[in-house]
Length: 389
Ligand SMILES: *Cc1c(COP(=O)(O)O)cnc(C)c1O
Image (cartoon, rainbow, N blue to C red; front, top):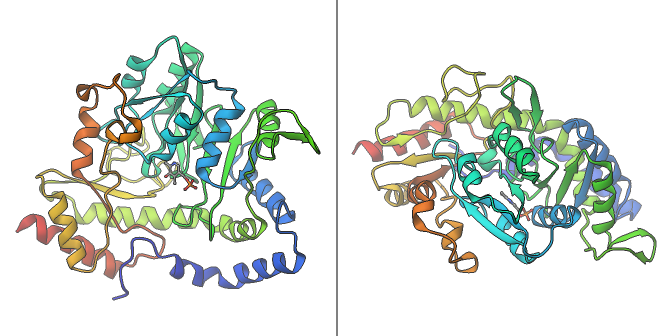
């Protein structure tokens, strides 16, 4: 059996080596390292793939979030609501811009921000909601867009874990994640579903004026060379990374299909296993059962395959897996509202029952495009042996 890895970037590279190597060499020979033609071509190709009017590449997914918020003109003191159960980058940029982060609880089945908790957190100072499409599944965008409309709020989708995924609305329309809110961010960090070989990110929007504003912000606030109209940043996707992303983008749907296929096999193996809860796909009637993974609307792209372990044995299971040569991850072990940097008197433990429970239960199994049946078999047997012992 091949050694099991959390993410197998080398195995994936082997399939696209020729094109990647040639494209990287071409950039080196052209010396167009910054804002070269590869960046522009990648931008156009991603716009087409997502069916969104504007993609603005930038240096990483954290910058993308920050620049999106700067572009919307959010001001110190504005409250921005986001999920308590996510990677810290989301709340970090809110705090960096001196906006006020307002963390709210998530749904137990989807791990995503809970629309009822958003409603309860709205005040006259609320300006924006940042849903994170956590682990590759879209948040409840019907509810979130309705709340935003009712209260005149911006919606910034953090699509770092969801690229290539879709959301099926109640009226059955389907849209790619990252094209639904006013603006969205994504990350091309190597382990993300569309990863480059270094850092990279992008902002998406269908709003022409906002796209124009953001194109200036990423480039030192310049709209005309050496005229600095607004305070900007330097945040660029470099041409070598763009060339690599161009080689990978045509494979993104296949990559996500491979992830879904692995998730399906995991789900099947864990069917009926006590104390193990498999990830729920809230497919909104594209599947009759919530745990059935639907290919027709790509409603989950499994950035992570995350189980809940109900008998307080999560840490022991993690150790057992590691002892058997199986890597695993706990995303995320601490609620953001309990992180030193983001503590706030406004928070009350009773407002986060789900996050407080999930941080003790979740475990993410190896998930990537190169998992084979033998590996999945070994992983699921090792998990099941442990919980049945
Ligand atoms: C990875 C990630 C980010 C940050 O992306 P970087 O490119 O590493 O800056 C932001 N939000 C979420 C949910 C992520 O998973």
